Structures are given as structure tokens and as C-alpha cells.
Length: 285
Figure (cartoon, one colour):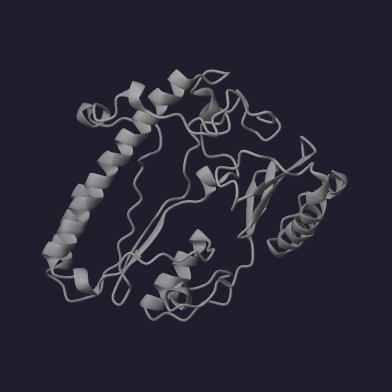
């Protein structure tokens, strides 16, 4: 990927026309194989176990993450700390290798003379659990898998500025169309990020998540509600006090109004997203 990008940059330097390049690295997806020197940077026995590690997730089968899912079957059940250290070793190694390849691409952009006039959006479609909550892969609604990196570099963008507003990854598409001078198509439901870069608040009060017919979620700046139709379970987390989502609050009497309010909002988001999965049985949980 880096080799092709470098070649493309060299060609772009010879052409005055604007260019668009979409790079989709396979890393750090499995098979997580990186050069041995990168693996050696992360001795397995020195890798810390996450504070939300569990040997087994209580609803793994009901949410589609049991031992029949290949992505979860790559580590033994129940999870062991040693296995998680080895998987994280491979994960860190291939991320580091990819990071160096991205560095090569950025250097090629600098060499092309186009760096000061180029917009860069760096993100990912998901992260991996790698032992957190007793899960291994991406098929869950916890922040370790759905809250992905998002970095913007471009003319006039403040360096190292952090924006806490919620967005969807699909917002990249109308943003890049705006850079190209293309009018926002009526059928595109997502939004340009330029107002947020200028200090505006997000148009999204909450964020919707789903996985097959097994999981639904709604996330606000304070709480996250998970809905598991097959398990007939709702789970609630206070993201400000419990950022690694260790403590399920859904069954606490004082949190029932919060659960009910978020559940109503989730149903409303389902309708907006044309999601017809029936969740009404969970309203009694």
C-alpha cells in the first residue's frame, strides 16, 4: 500500500490537477503478521492486561460472539491472560508496522510539494477487543471496538486540537465532496465536518449502533445503552465515570429512568435508520 501511494504521489507531482487518493490498509486485520522485528518490540510477558478483561462474556452466544464465530474462535474459551498477551503483542506489532508505512506516505506527500494544500482524513472502520470484556474481535458495541480514531489534517486546521463532538464515519463522504466543490446530494443523510472544525456543535445528539439482529446501542455524551434481543437484556454504562464500561447499571433502581429514556431514544433512532428489528420485549427489562 505504501509503495503504490509513493508512486501515486510522484505522478501527482507532475500534474497540476487536484488528486484524490483512498487508501484502505488491511492491517491491523487478521492474519496479524508483521516482520519479526516489530513483534520483538513487544515482549508478550510485558504486555499489560486491560482492566476490563474477562475470561468469558456472559452473553457471548446470544450477541453472536460465541465459539461459532470465527473471529472469536481464534482464542480459547475461557480466555486466559497469557493468550491475550500474545494476541496483543501481534496487534501492537502490526499497528506499529502500519504506522511506519503511513509515515512513508506522508513523507512522499511532502516530497511532492502538495502537503500544504492537501486534506488528510485518517480513521478506521473498527477496533478489536483483544480480551476486553472476554471478547476478541470487533462484533460488539463497546467503545474499545466502535470508538475509532479520527484525525483531520488540512489547510487552516489547528494542530493538536481535540473536538469531543460525536460524528459518524460516513460524515467523511459529504466532507470530501465539499472540498471538491460538489453540492451535498439530497440522498446523503450524513453531514460535512467543516462546521465542527469551525467550532459548531454536532448535529447528532446521540449515536446509533447495530450488529446484525443481535445487538443495538445508543450512545450519548454520558451514557451508553446496549440492547440484546436474543438475550432479552439491556445493559447501561456511565461513560464519564466508567470509561472502560466495567459496571452495568441497568438493574439499579435509581437508573431505571435513564434506561427508559435511552430506550425510547433508541426506538426513535431505529425508525430514522429504517431499522425494523423488534425490541419492544426489552422495554420490560
